Image 1 (cartoon, one colour):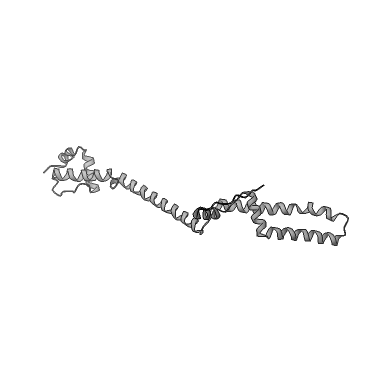
Image 2 (cartoon, rainbow, N blue to C red; image 1 turned 120 degrees about the vertical axis):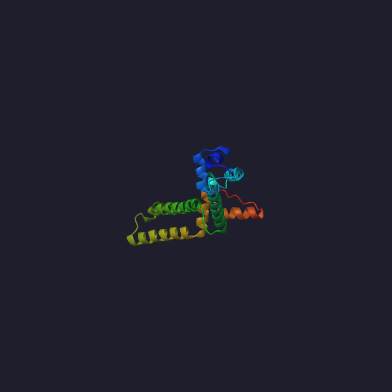
Amino acid sequence: MATIAQAAAHICCSRSQFDQYLAEGVITRQPSGKYDLDQVRREVLAHLRSIAAGRGGAAGNKLTEERTRLVAAKRRREERQDAIEAGEVAELEPVRRYLEQILLGMRNRLLNLPGQTACMLAMRPQEECFELVDDAVRAALEEIADPAWTAARVAAAGVESKERQTQANECGCEVEETDSN
């Protein structure tokens, strides 16, 4: 049996480090103040091995927390990808581009109405002008509301459905290329 100072010297550490091991519970505290050197050496080596393996001590706890966060982040990423593939959620960028193209087409179509109707309105009575403008606006709105018009605008903009590409890839088919000119 050895004193605390002798036990500390046996494991090549200072008295304060030995006290820290006692406080952390690495070394079993002996009420008599006498320590078995073999037991002290085994407990300290076991503690150092657990730290080296990432299971013990402050460094081991930090490493374990980092690994846990990494696994959780990977799980969240996979869950998001599964939700996208299942159609439960959508990526915002393609939706934003799609809506921009639709709205830009609507804007351009409506801005073209005055030029298209101006020549038809020259020297006509007000009632006839109203009917011509009303017919032109309604025709433009019907054209905008037509799904074929929307599809043509999207195809012209070069935006293609990811779903269509995915389905084609799954069945081994080739996706037809459309000429946007």
